[in-house]
Image (cartoon, rainbow over the protein chains, first blue to last red):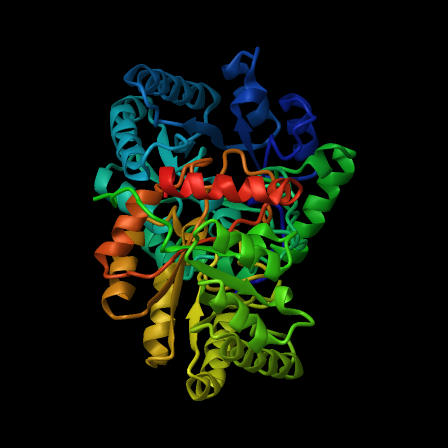
Length: 277
Length: 277
């Protein structure tokens, strides 16, 4: 059963990377002025900022800080590299706490040529090692399965079933999963796996955009909702059926949109959110 | 357990599309002269030929005709389109019989925006409708699951588990599956699913190439074995463990290699086959 049309923007969240040309302060003012309810902040947008002050600004603008993107990238061929990754993930947790974000999204990582099974083990060990710090900071870790076309270098976690297995194996209230339609829309087990993580409380985030035909770039050619073939309302229906009542986060990497006028793009996002999400 | 290194070319097969600039006759002479054991013919390479005569030429050159590529593309929004697809698949079966190819590889198809569940049903119905013709012609149909990045427009069958389910559901000795490492290498259930189709006699074909980092084009940037991150020997080990004793088919779509000297490329293929496959 597909979800009903959306009638307000209270649960719309936009990622700072979606409107990458805007500094976080401008993005926040624009999102707020448009009546958008939430913002997810990418760490690059915080460079050089007092993170607590940025968090205060976002709240003053009536924006919910939905999440911090991103931690992860646990696998490395050398132990020293894996240690650096742990340090960086603990910093990400601290940044989320300072900003007031309830969770950090994890793009888990992969090393080209390293066996996937080894990368998957390093990911599990990495998350387990960061969990005590996350718990102490009151920040959750959201494992985001990435599309199989990123299995070489970005994430060896490529299905929601894998992310669910991992979260359940780690068995902590401080770890869950993030569902991004771009990565998962093709999966014949998606409805089942959304139900699984929703019902056991592990579904922490829901990201939306669209898959264009043709897609001309593996990374930065995502579509605005309605521009592609993803059954957005059907998937939102599954997410809601599973008990998720959080934000719908628009995360679009697009060389095409980044090159254009960001205010016009934000208007399009709002229109597409009502019409297609 | 990884497979042992290969010591001869008797089970090497090259697809005509791999050396696309060569007409099928030249490709066949070159493959034969290099000592390669098999050839898989793409239908475009047969345009304007007497297909029986081409089959005879291939056999005279001591090449095994391993398969015909490709049928499929069953889903369409309109019934008339689905009927055209059935007609075309029956023609593909006839071409395979005329050429002397034991099976037709199926790229099953997808329609952007049509629900995946509907495309999957149309694929099942399409294969079922073609099966009597395939049986009468003595030609098998090999369902090839395609990488999830092709789920929008090329195939709604995106995992080996799905292809296995479909083949088992159709329950005919005239239908099986084709395993292509490019499409499936990332799948955490790959070993299990290879075992499943190998042991029940459904594993009809094994395609190899490599996944490059970065991959710059979704369709035509495949790598030569050894240029990427796919655990080729490990996967071949799984395939052999499952009882497969057929050809290792090199299928590389590459704008880069197609633009270069094909004789030099064929030498590279042979070298990479020994060293990395």
